[in-house]
Structure formats: structure tokens, C-alpha cells
Length: 100
Length: 166
Image (cartoon, rainbow over all chains, first blue to last red; front, side, top):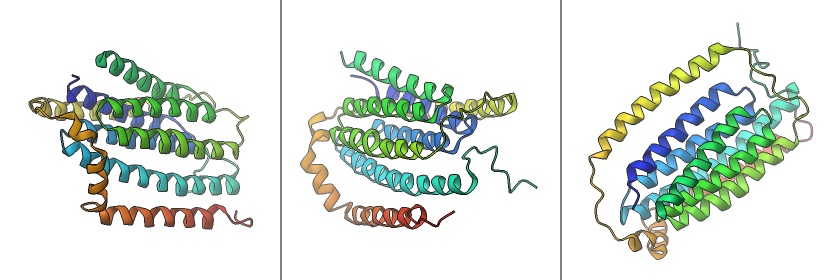
């Protein structure tokens, strides 16, 4: 039987990779994908740290996280599409209107 | 056997996310993420969470990533991301990552004292129990998430559905 700690370590590594991807990548779409990676790492940690009957509760919460992630993806992607239509670019280093 | 499955799935998952960081094509990134999320679905299965595993593969690796690929289709992909010359950004990102990893390692040390309680995995796999939970204890969150999804559809249509937008 695999200890829960192994799953937690994997979740931590995935979350950190998501953070790195978010800061290193410069197109909005990939940065958005990095956010999804972080959400999934959170889900994994949730499932790893519950046991027995609590696992059912964790699954219910994972379902809600996935539902919120789906809603976020839909709205976020439509915002990105709008940005692209207006600016013809989704690269964050080219969108610098707020820079003083 | 279980350990081998765990090692393979976690290696695939981490490698796919690392490939997403290294690759410069958004379409490839989305496909790498499909691989990572499918492997993560397998890991959820290892954790005796068949429902979460199925939801992960169907909703995440299936629906959400297809949505990403459709979005990729609307952008100009011929222009690849230029190679980054800024080392500062990478340095800052790795510093932040190291800090975060240290923090999470502290949390891991704290939970490592928790002895794995003897529990019956059948109890966790019980779908009827999960269904009852969703419609009793989690009834309000369930209804609210239904409302949220509805609002997200309406919002996406209002934002990107208009022809004259932009």
C-alpha cells in the first residue's frame, strides 16, 4: 500500500511545476493551463490526505472543484478570445498598456 | 504492483507538465496536459476514488482540454513563442518555486506523523454513499455549482458570442 505522503509529495511537485509554468510562460493560454495544473494538484492533495469514509467527502469536494474549474475555463477562454480579437496577440509581454 | 503503477503514472504526469513548460507551441502544451490529466485520473483511481477518476478523465482530459484546443484553433499558431532571453524571470520563478516547495515539505513532514488508519477501501469506493452525500450534505453546493455552470455558459456567450465584439 502506498503511503498518503507519496501522493502528497507528488501533489506538491505538480503544484510547484504549475507555479513555475505560470511565471515562465508568456502566452495567456499556456498560463491558463498552468492554473489548471495547480487546481489538479490541489485535488490530488485533497484525495491523498483523507481516509476511509472521508474519501467519499473528498470526492464530493473534488467534483465541485472540477465544476468550478470548468466554469473558470469557459469564462477565462472567452476573455482570452476577446483579448486576441482586440489586440491580435495573447502574449503577456505585448499587453503592457498598464505599464506606466 | 500498485507501487509500479504509482511510479509510472506519477512519472508520466510530472514529465508531461515539465514538457509543457519546455515546449513553445500552445497546441502541443494542451496535448501534454491531456496526458498529464489522464495520468492523474489513474492516480485518483489508485486512491480508491473511482468517481473522481472518471470525472477527471471525462471532464478534464475530455471536455476542458478540448475547449482549450478549440481556443488554440482561433489563435495564430504559426508564430511560435520566441526563445526567452530574460533570465531574471526564470530566476524569480525558481526562487518562488523553491520557497513554495520548502513550505510544502514542512507541511509534508507535519503530516508524515499521521499513521495511516486501518480503513476499508470498500467504504471509500461505495458509490451509493457518495450519491447520498451529494444529495444530502452537499445539496446546496451541488445546486450552486449547477447555477454556476449555467452562469458560466451565459457569461461565455455574452463575452465571446457577439459578432461585433472587439
